[in-house]
Amino acid sequence: MGSQYRLLTLFADGGLMMYPLVLCSMISVGVMIAKFFTLRIAHKGTNRVLEDVDELVQRGDVAGAIEVCYNTPGPASAILLAGLRRIEGKKLNDGELESAVATVGTIELSFLERGLVILATIANVAPLMGFLGTVYGMVMAFAAIEAAGNVDPALVAGGIKVALLTTAAGLVIAVPVNIAYNFFVTRIDQLVADMEHGASKIMSLAWDLERDGKIEIVKSGT
Image (cartoon, rainbow, N blue to C red):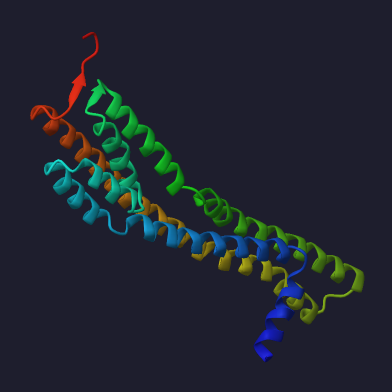
């Protein structure tokens, strides 16, 4: 209970700038939780779906491979699904498969990066907001000293302490948000590698099926 009152006191002493800082912290926590689970689900089962699709297509069960991709969440599955749906038609225009894979890849990457701008903005802005609150607090502290007419060390120290609260709050918010941002960027890079693997897999499958005469790729001008 004492620590709760202590936090409330620090919040009140920090002044008006503490309100947007608390709002930033709440938004960042929400984004980080959502992003963590989104990326976790996106990566889950990627290696398995690549192996299953390869095996099913080699057996000629394109419909089964499509079902596996449809039931497996993730960007790699989405790319495989886009390619398999075109392969299922047995006849492709030259460049159609590459275009479909590239389009889905762009959409999936945009989805994966959603929310990163918010985290990056908060990581950059929170310390600046804290510093702004500190500057404002220092101005108010010196104004109080000027009004008092004498330099009281306790008054000076108290004013500086209160002024620095917003800087501390801004850094407390920015540090974990920055760490989370870098972690998510690393995870997205791994998922991009999965997407590239999926694109390479579907292109290889298409070439193998064309070579075996199971699908036809119509070249431009023919």
